[in-house]
Length: 617
Image (cartoon, rainbow, N blue to C red; front, side):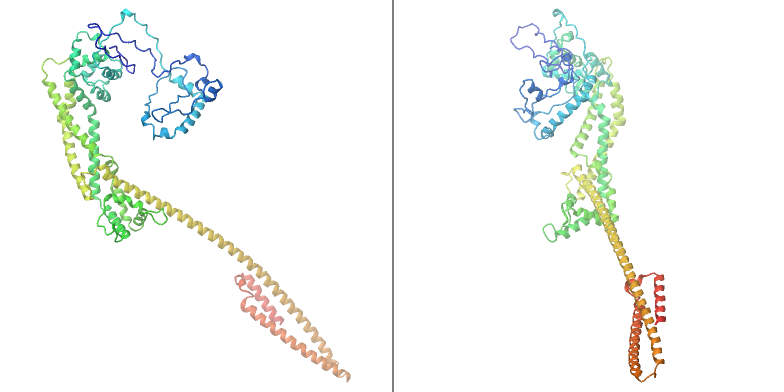
């Protein structure tokens, strides 16, 4: 079979039965030219056929203008709902491939790609126009152009070397894929790297792949006839011919791969064992969490009454994460919010349960089935490596040149297994069994079955409850802050309303005081006028008395004047009495109740008025 490069076309099948006997198989087709790609579209224009970025995009409008039939927006495949439309944008020259794995049509439906199809088409149009406008397509072509090589001169027909392959075409393809990752090394160089053991080319992923490419006995028998002429074999066959001569090749690869992964796998296994052990001890030794469970049980019996779920003596541990399902009348507050408020305000000492568990986050990630598998595999692999080392030292004959397996593996897994790795695993083995013991005890303590309950399920119950409790605390705190803000706002509004009312009352009081002052001044003015009139009348009365006896005819007038004078005196007495009564009332009440808040100077002026009025009377 002709050698094929990684990523090239598959080799041709072996010659069919019935072909000319004894003749060599027909020559393979020539390898593809450098830079060729299976995905290249036939009839693609050369790189210099388009000089403008406008040629990248062919829109429906352009197609109609040029007489082409309009393209359907989202044509779909006949086998499913996946669209089969072509990309609207393509490069003017060949670029380096972008590593993408296409989603199959069978897996298309119910994916985000199918759901967001219409939006993605709009985004593609928008991004495409913007990339074209900003010159980003040109930048991509500038930085990610495929490296081109000058084509090698084709050998003359008579100079072509015919290659032979005895391997299955599919198997040859898989071998060539692995060889392509070895940077073009020749089979002899790969053999030397395997014998060297520590070669940097032999990475952990590559060793894992090589373990699946071990020559079978049948393949070895077919390849032995070309032992002296390996140059006539295809690359995959030549590789197998070279490595099949390595002593215990399969066991060697297995030991080399385990050596590469031992430290990482040992550390992962150790951390998982410690996480489960420590978390089990924490949930068993906790002091406050059992009191939380008692409180939850009491609330449940109180709320369920004597019904089917009432009068419970214990609850399953997963029930603690169902408190959020019971909501208050407002439809927002849950029973967990109530529990958090109660513990915060009435039982703050129980809040310590949220900090007692420190390893739950790590332990809830452990899956027992995987943990047991990793533990068993490591135990078996250590035994196998020790056996392989012993078998390697028993091989008779001269060791192969450059074979460092015995020396390096002895350092890595001989002395270290005996002195370090083996003892480390023995210690790990004891911790593993201790973990199972304390875990079973912790799970049983909370009424669960350790055989059917994994650490992931068990510890996740505690972890989720603590997280939910903390969230409920935050909700309660936010609600309390909102209520305090509303209360402060309400009090501020009340104070503003009271201030406005006081201002209004003060204004009304000032207006009443002005009116009272005017009324008092009018009253005093009236009193003064009345006093003046009385004095005038008194003077007139004296003059009339002095003229008495002037004549007999005047007696009647004098009698009349006495009568009138008597009436005036009675009237004056009446006015004086009413005035004193008003003054007494003013003195007792202070003119009016709103004036009770008058200043001291106002009160002093009122007192002076009283004194002047009394003197006038």
